[in-house]
Length: 92
Image (cartoon, rainbow, N blue to C red; front, side):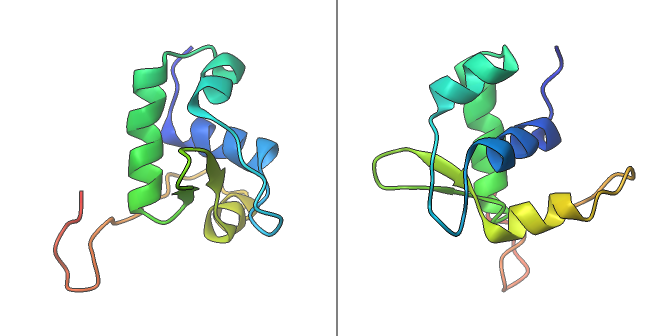
C-alpha cells in the first residue's frame, strides 16, 4: 500500500481528537496503515511542519483542528500546503 500524507492525516483524524487531545503513536499508525514506522515519521514530521498534526512532549501524536478541518473540506483535488514560515522562508 502506498502511504501518502493524506492517508496519514486521515488515519490521525479518525484515531485522535484535537479538542479532547486524544493521541496515538507512530507504532499504532504503522499498524493501522500497514506501513513502516520510518515512512510514517517522515509524513508526520511534514504534517507537523504544516500545523496539520501535533507531537506531544511524550512523542504521542494527534491531528490538529486545522488538520481535521482540512479533511472536512472533502475535496478530491490535490491540496498544496506551503510549509513556509511567517517570514516566507521554508521551515522544512
